[in-house]
Image 1 (tube, one colour):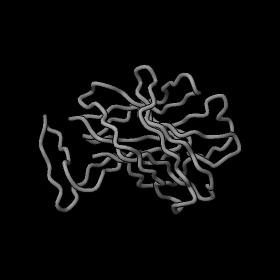
Image 2 (image 1 turned 30 degrees about the vertical axis):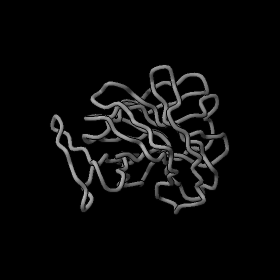
Image 3 (image 1 turned 90 degrees about the vertical axis):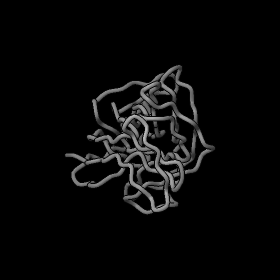
Image 4 (image 1 turned 60 degrees about the vertical axis):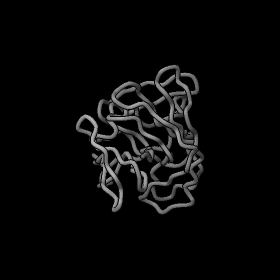
Amino acid sequence: MRLTILFFCAAVMGAQFIGVSGHRTRTTGAPLDALAITSGAGTTLVNTGSAPFSWRGIYGAFLGPNKTVTALCRWKVAGNIQTHLVELVANTGYVILASASVDLTTCASGTWCCASIAPVTVIGYGGATYFVLSHETDGGDQWYDVFPVTSDSGFQAEYAAYGDNTSFGQYATGKIVVPVNLRYH
């Protein structure tokens, strides 16, 4: 039961790149998705049992130079109809850097539903770690249980993550739940 996720950094026609320590960073063009789903077969769906940990997502670090996050996203499972609060949280002090209400009625099933945020600069070069979390409710929209991810040079997925309103934790190395995503330059 696996859902394969690929992190990617694809060139967009007309975008400019700057090489820094072996990493490629886009300076213009459309934002990149940190995650890309390539297969959804066989993954366990969950919509109960999230309490007391109502926040689910991923814990990881940005690699290379600092990035600017411009949107937060949640995957839409067939039948999802709720609006979910998705947050970008700094691991140090659990500071909420950005929040977005992601309305799952605005996109097709099997796609990322995203909401734009005021641009947030995140620290690269392994200088900080972050959570990207979606608020889930018991009996609400379905979400995917833990499944593996792979990383590219822009973002390193380290663990699946969970939490309540006061603390967050990591489990399942190299995995993700819900899934959540972010867009960045």
